[in-house]
Length: 117
Image (cartoon, rainbow, N blue to C red; front, side, top):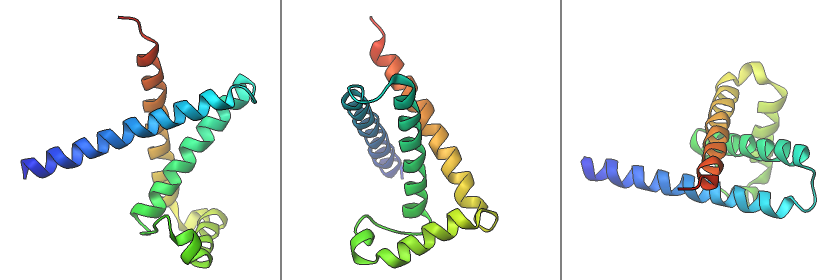
């Protein structure tokens, strides 16, 4: 059991670090094209969109190839969640909670990178 905990935890931590680094790379590239305030809102939007994608994969069991293989069911579910938010409270709670977790984690990651030791 402890090996499973160690493996899953290390994979989750590794995934978070790679996510933070890729968002940081995106931010670096987009600094040339967007003003700081617009860039901030764009990054927050992308992070919350990632939270929604996590919901689609974790609870509705969609994979990345579904957008090509089965786009009508995927878009039908996405539009149903967006157009009927009262019927999909768990989707919105998960998206907002996980998006907030990723946002806070990303801003902390950026702050740690700026620290001088």
